[in-house]
Image (cartoon, rainbow, N blue to C red; front, side, top):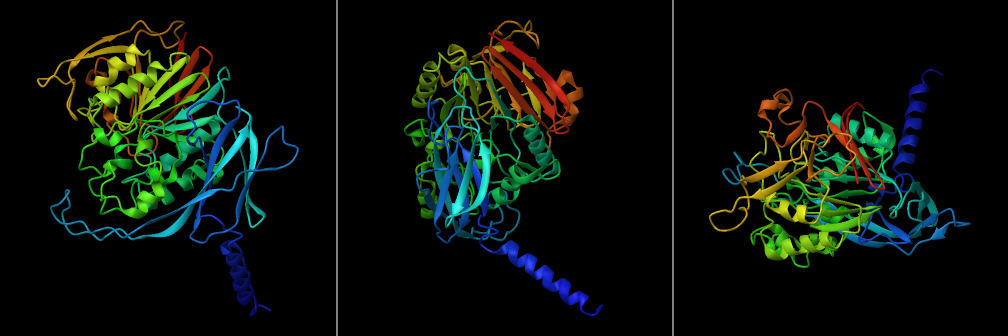
Length: 497
């Protein structure tokens, strides 16, 4: 009897392994997740876009939805599908782009399929259930919540610079899950270090679409909670696209509004891959259509708020009149919104020694102020900072422009230091938040205890712990708290109108 035990154990193990690797058991390369899609405005009949990834074998897929008004499962329109692949990259050459020696090429990415299904006729703010069927059999089921309408309170969580596969990233994901947000915003540097397909598979989806919530792994967030993101330098600012042809996955794996500038390439450096030049391989261009490159700048409404999302990378020329006109018009058209929020990656106002000189977004401050923007969120700097409410007048440059494409931007600011953390009135100026402690290595921890090293516009500076911003918007009240990856409240303030 004892001699048969090892063989029986091996047979049982083989059976378990086989059951876990059959197509029915593992139908997805990446499990389903929700996005707001190309829907900038809130509608009485809301929608979301459901995405999932599979191997390159077409199957019969269907999606069904059930809301409180549905007596039975309601079928959605058949999903669309795009094929995604990438060739092997070119090896790094010594002396080029800082390479010290030849490095092997990145491996090719096998062709796989990205499906998109629109979940329609949803009730604003009301939870619903969806299921994904393969060949008529349900293989995935979850709940989600569409966008909330004006007048409905909502909560969002915001953190940037996250996808580095660190324990802190998983812990922040878990705290996000505990906060129960209606959506999550990532102000850039979604995955490190080049926004690649391979990096999404190891440093994004496992943490934010885990099956069970734990501080050590992550949480089942993105299957139920829409993530929205601005592109960061590690997402789209690539000088070495030929080395990493599986980069720019932002345009492959996200589905966000396409209401940005009609021709952003006019304001992009001609040498940059975002111009749609031949540097971008045909397979990528086909798979990223129609999101590339327009999805880098967009706006959307959520509840009583209007969000304007900008690409702050240095290849963008925000001195370009057409871009500035688009920004001003977008904000001017949103004056009926109770709250106006702007988000991008590189902060204009930052006290860290790291990235201090990257102030290319400062010259947009007068546009924010003229259009009554309340809060500007950024990442890039891997810590948390909050400014006093401020107004800023950029100093003219020698060439007459407000600022160059990169570098420090001189000017004068006025600070509203009378604004308290629990104010009963609207602050005089814009509050600038840096929330870039979402998982990547922290910057300048020594400065937290050196207030003399902060710029005079800085009110709070927390750089010794990873954290996330938790914001509640309820009518004319905007309440924010900064929470550590262990759940400790580090900072809080409230704006009332």
